[in-house]
Length: 444
Image (cartoon, rainbow, N blue to C red):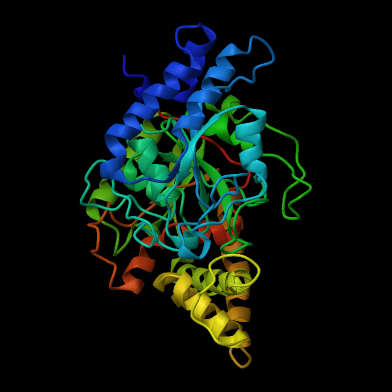
């Protein structure tokens, strides 16, 4: 039996039956990391020695164990972990050690007693669709090392796909959980905005960011979402709603469920392989009793521009704190305060982060605010309203995740616009704050 092939719910069952120990599970994943990490390059920081000690301690505890105590997990490197580096894969935070745990990290590591195997690579400050923008390394797609794993949660998706962790946490601002999950062939879920606390998540775009699970199957995604969801008084955007066990939804069939298929998401620019996969999925849903109908969701031509204006504006504001004085990288090359600010930011940020800061500063500047940022916020409302109308008729709206399959490393690096188009199928969901009232479907 290859332990690393098992899902989390299978690992839990074997722990409960005493067929495996936490130490055995943890060592199996560490062996897998030692075998695969040199090629895949999914981790920024490894915590393998500490993981073994924690596993032994959990095995020695006889009572009051949480259901998932001793199960390993990987955490994207933009979530604060007390006493452990939180770098956001940036030179700016290369040596930053967080003094506290983010709420989600506290839930999985401290409350549930999962074992953190390490911090996972990402596009710098979550800005990218390929994990090529990391300061430290380029993560590879484990199915084909010449191709990207997607981004920005590429390290999380690649680690799960390569069986280096059984599940992982990612963050999604415009598709950064769903797109790499799609390109790596694993399950990724972007929760409703406000369902999961953002306290301790280093902000990219505060009105769009959301933490979510990346897993091997849908049941594991439902389990992890049930653990991390919930109100948090430390996060003013956190929704105060009752806790829910999302695994219960998996017992329902989909007979009579109305699925809307927006024709705008199946037109030009969508890869034929992607179209074929979706058509197969539609036929499976139909055979299971779902009602499928094509309709018009005329937002695609607005969504991408709207997203990048809002996201870059918020990034420009959020990253203003990294100035070489309060925390983060500080240049040694300065003679006055202005040079300290300029050189620290110039040397500490990568090219893509600088590009988005400049764009965000521009759309917020006097004379351009009304023409760009204010108009984008109006279009955001339009996108929300279009989805609202769609959900008045349909239970589920089915779209592609990525318009293309995993592309070659370096293929789009010199063309930022082409790279941004990788997000065209996902950004509208973040703009609208979806999914609300999640209806989970599981095809066996």
